[in-house]
Image (cartoon, rainbow, N blue to C red; front, side, top):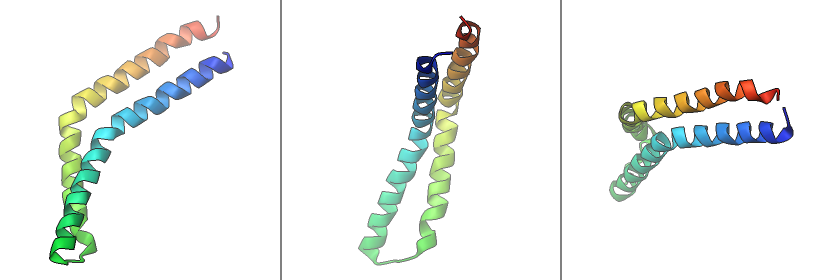
Length: 89
């Protein structure tokens, strides 16, 4: 296994993690921004008001993007497993 192989596997792993977590993170960020604007407009300073909507939105986003996320992980895992045979050469 060469250093290039390790860097390639690490890069693909980081890319897969970022790509897989992006929909949930973006949805949580958008709902947090919307709730922050609402809190600023109404001057409601309740810290716990953002947790439930964020949890619900992240869960719904996970349900929507679940099949795509599973396909992404399967593709990555299959690529890693198939490259095991060629690493020793």
